[in-house]
Image 1 (tube, rainbow, N blue to C red):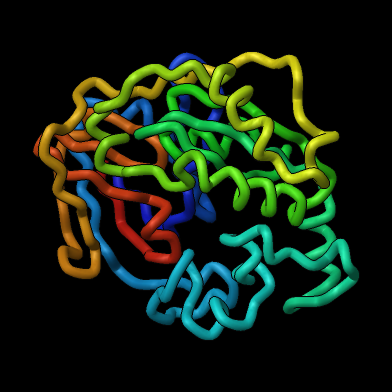
Image 2 (tube, rainbow, N blue to C red):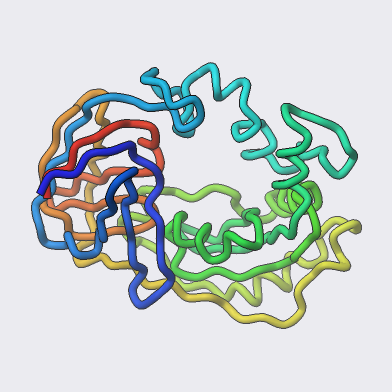
Length: 263
């Protein structure tokens, strides 16, 4: 069966294992059901996730114009410490920024390739951890706005990583960590403004991904360079499709591309 549509990050359902869905305008695919089946992917165009025009995708699914103009791509998205809505200061659109920034945010530890610190809106737990391919995660603080979460992350990255090594994550070359122990180690380094929001009593969340075969050598599929590809799906982890020939395809990194899927 042939499906076509604009790629956006896979939607997920927290279960054993994680359930994945590719959602298009008029249809959706339950990706778990495609395991051990051959999938063909063909690039047929582009569609900016903001303006909807057929323009080359610059970053995060946006064309260059929207990436530099639209509030959904403001610098504070990737660097939450730059948030200013709590000061009533506008970056690109104060109404939008207040709506997103002035809500509960979580600073967390996740183990996907190594222990890392990260920030997400409370409503995105555990989705954010799933998207990163973390097999265990733990909340550290819950703060009322994005700025406090951002300065906490900045302070903690002096003592723990803030990036995931995607190759290590996909190879599953990782070890279990005691995140509760890490949380206690890092407590002293939380900024004074965020100390009252430290979460004293909680437990790790464990995540199981639908992967039947992990790759040992990775080949990343770039649709711009290779607009057509076909392979047997053997796993899904984070926002990656893993194929039997050790090709991996990052759905999130290809948002805004219009594809045709033959499954």
